[in-house]
Image 1 (tube, one colour):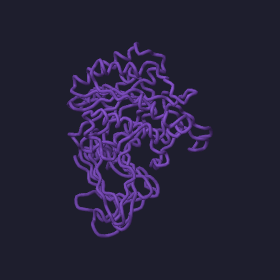
Image 2 (cartoon, rainbow, N blue to C red):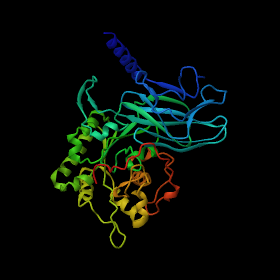
Image 3 (tube, rainbow, N blue to C red):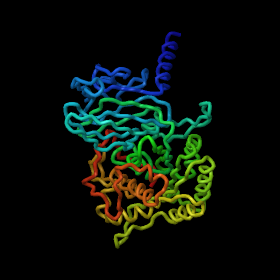
Image 4 (spheres, rainbow, N blue to C red):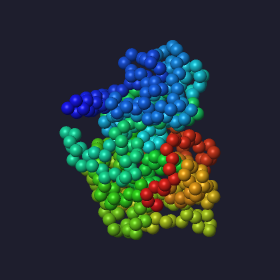
Length: 440
């Protein structure tokens, strides 16, 4: 009986913490701003209280004196991860970054390496305030009363992902990450872009793999737009339905939200034709989104890295891109032709340099990698970033309604002139795995 009471007490304290509307954390030492929760270098994540660092090794608490909130901070020589138990939903996160007596350099990612802030540098003695907006999800499908009515059928590998674990996890990375405070508040008004797709779109958790979906948040105005990436490796339109992933989205999507649809690689690979349900399902999804007041946007699948003898990209996707183009016209919905843009991009890179955008690495580049990696479908972080810029370019060039929410860090992009790979900034995360994602 005593153990049961203890369990119930711990459960209720964690549950009540997760139900709070606003979370305020003061990073640094025990010298804490009024109304904030103190977070020090020893604040390891505890299920009983619902917050903390996933790993405290290497963390340092620095106190420069002065202002209680910004005069101290947490830093480390390696990436560190702070998690908070929150209900699923959209959240604004306000961050104070910097050093009141020094300089700093911080990159911020969330959940499965979703890029939010890149290479934020502060000058000597400066503190900057930054805001990001994050979508947190779980696998439960609920009715309006909050009662479970279904569940997303996750694959075994997904159970390790940071975006299905009922926690908001923030990654602090770079040469000198210095964090003074975090404020987390629900955002009930942002337009949500729900992304559906496969391994070329998914928020990939492990280095060196990446996809354009996890780079997209970087290019949109926080507070106004939030990216909710529901893509998963190996999925077809049918599998996305069978595993109730799309049901989860139908359950959450609101009028004014967006539904990005990008399928083709696995639909084509499995031997299906565009007539074996692909067109029908695409059309049904478009109609359903419109019925719910959401805005569907079709995205053609990007090309694989397959060149002919003239260094031109070979179409390996049969008529799937054309089928999507035709449906977009028939249903009068917006189309982002990533298939065409990726062809231009990869041909501009050429057969050899394009390897720099894909998972092509010699043996022993990563832990437990005895053989070379040579994948012609899946991208590394640089390739994913370039493809995300292609998506944003199409939105801007077509003057789609979303274009007014593109952030100022997008400076324009010409796929005929790719960014130099040596200029791409991506400090690697802790999680690494050479196992190829599902799908091709």
